[in-house]
Length: 116
Image 1 (cartoon, helix red, strand yellow):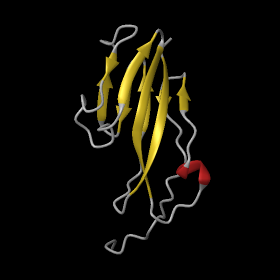
Image 2 (cartoon, one colour):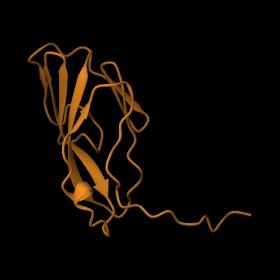
Image 3 (cartoon, one colour):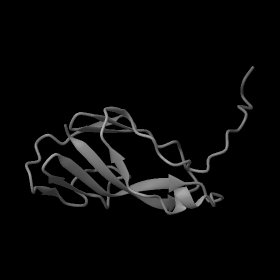
């Protein structure tokens, strides 16, 4: 079974939206983008910038046996976020397929002022 180890790199942004990640075998789903990493052989490294996505621009992806390591996935946080878990996140180790649990990004839910 393929596992993922994802290192989050917090980045303060004014345009923060909920980061949605999921795993399906050797596929990492980032927002609506499915990244099939099955082509990476043991020891292969996908260098930073190889995937054109703003959250992966600095990320290096490496395969070590059954482990896929994602280094430096941008983790957008709200400028007001002070939660140490979000500001200094631990790497996320993923074994099971499905949604990936992430720290709170410090988002506040605002009422929709355009609702009827």
